[in-house]
Length: 220
Image 1: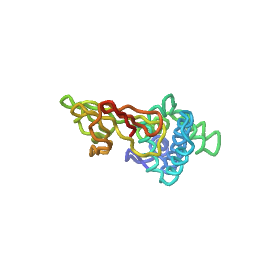
Image 2: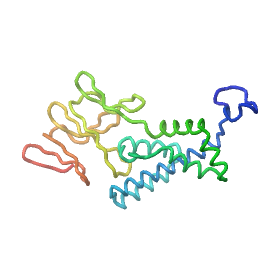
Image 3: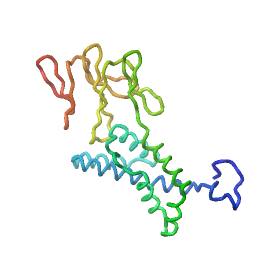
Image 4: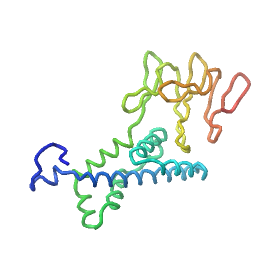
């Protein structure tokens, strides 16, 4: 495959040619490494075995492209999962799994063009983060591609960064007209808990939300 649509010659072969099979295998090995990173993170945060088993079972049902998107979504809403992660090390492990000789591994590691290509590919696939934005004094959320996840109609938003889940979307704590509720970041502002509470706080274990209404407190 000639990524620049230039004739491939013996002189420019290494610079112009990218092996589609190599890309496919490196993508697979990188995905395996990112999968392991998420597992290590959940274990370090003392996630339950039941939750871990659900997570593993879900990922095993996915094809590579879908698995990449699911892991990227998990990282987006659990960014601490990749805190301190060296992507060069992730790539080096993927290269090692791909190579059948140490000499070939050394050649790949020394190829700066190849390293840059794959590092950009990893960042683009896995580190695309959503952002909170403001419009006329109200807040919303959009993903890395600019798609609206939550429309800008709330005076307060708190994105829930859970470190253990089974990939089910977690609600967002939101304030509207002076009252708190829960909504989903699904582009439709789906209400999970009505805007009737004086405050909603996050708990460390399920049920994840504690809501206060006057002198009453309920778990959601």
